Length: 134
Image (cartoon, rainbow, N blue to C red; front, side, top):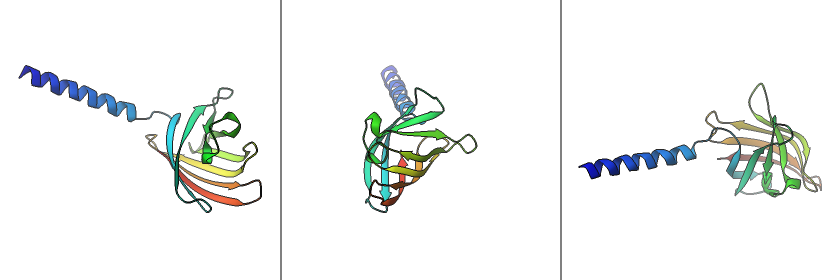
């Protein structure tokens, strides 16, 4: 009986520890992204969000719109003080696309971020995108 109690206690601790690891407390970290647009069919990839080291009111998103993980292709966004949404306005990604407008709505429990953004490529093609980070 003692062995069973010890095993059940150990399993409970392991299970609760795993659940805590999955729970987010902020937007920083690695996210899976599902994205669909006017031009691209459904695609899935990973992004990383870090707080900007220069200004902690901003966040840097690496691999936004699958542009690349390097610094030159990262995107800077800010959290709107009134709504709590993430905002990107008129941002040019080096040698790539311009983001005309982007809004990310963060779930209260940080379980996902739902994005809507409009891009314009260097050759002038506009693209409306819906994405979900989870």
